[in-house]
Image 1 (cartoon, rainbow, N blue to C red):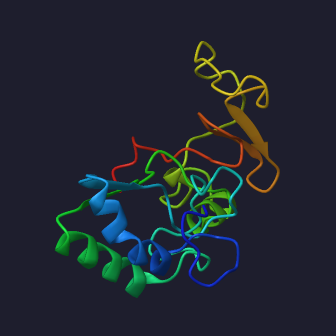
Image 2 (cartoon, rainbow, N blue to C red):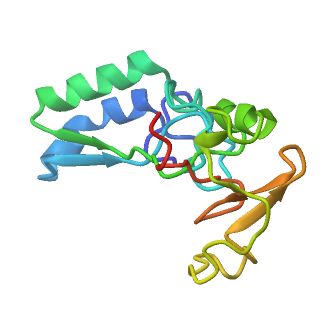
Length: 162
C-alpha cells in the first residue's frame, strides 16, 4: 500500500508508481502485478470490491491508471491487474440490490441464497479462525448467502446466466 506515495497521505498511489518505473525496469523486472485497486471498504486489502468501474481514490483515478499502463509499456514492462470475480463486497450495489430483491428474481440471483445453512455442508471453511460457516444470515434478505472467504465477501452466482 505504500511503495511510493506521491501526495504524502501515507498510501502509495499510481502517480508514485509512475515516478518509480525507471527504477523498477532497471531492476530487470518485466512484469508488474497490481493487487486490487478498486473502491473497497478495505476489510481484506481491497479484495472486497465495492465498485469494479472506478479506482480507489487513495490510489488515484482512472487517468492515473491509464497513464501508468502506458508508461509501463513504454519501458517494456507488462502490467497484470488482479480482477476479483468470485465475490464482491457486501457494500457493492449488486449485493445491496440483491438482498432487497424478490427471491428468485434476476437481481436476487446475482448471489447464492438459501433458506438454511445446510447446503454444501462438506465444503471446507477457508478462514476457520474467523468464519464459523460458509453461509451468513442476512436479515434484510431474510435468507443465508454463500461466501467462500469472509462473510463480508458474498460469492457471485456463476450459475446465473446474466
